[in-house]
Length: 281
Image 1 (tube, one colour):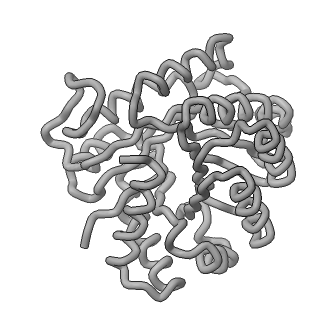
Image 2 (tube, one colour):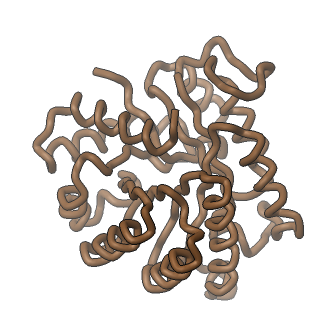
């Protein structure tokens, strides 16, 4: 069976020993590493340079890396807009910094960006970043993705009404990216229909993923997988700890195989094709 592609993770933030094992272990065909804040752009870029086929950073290439593709993803995640001891507030030139990394990295995409209505500060009990501010930063990144013709990996949690309004605005302005990956999709069936309609109206190709650590406890996940179908699904772990990636890939393949009544080999082959189309490798 061909090796799967992990379409969404944050392994640059996890244990370095586990990451080294993942890179050299022959577990994945490749992966997309999602930054969360400008301070980790450079680390993501360095990791993407380790594969032999990388178009960037000859000096970073690593002969022990068995992966064919590592896609660097640059963006600002809504969890990290508030500023704290580990993630400082965005600097005034953050959009220029993001633009630079996207323009100078040929195989990059915009991610992880989005909106979150359920991530609260433990002390204040308020959203880590006000929703109005989240929307402002999100829309700037979506417009940039449209201008640079880059796909987007999108985070959305309990914000579907606001997200729909924002996407409708971007559609009217003709600043919609050509493709969106709704990662760890947690919407209802009606929300899925709404996102599909918006994307169709904006000439945007949508893909969807379900992370075992996020989605597999929800009874609606199987229904959503069945409704989406194999042609628009990607496999993802959403993990920081690289040692968890393999078991999550296996769990995802197993669940999708059972729901869609497809052979596991067919799941890997088609989701790899989908990843190739979305990420452009």
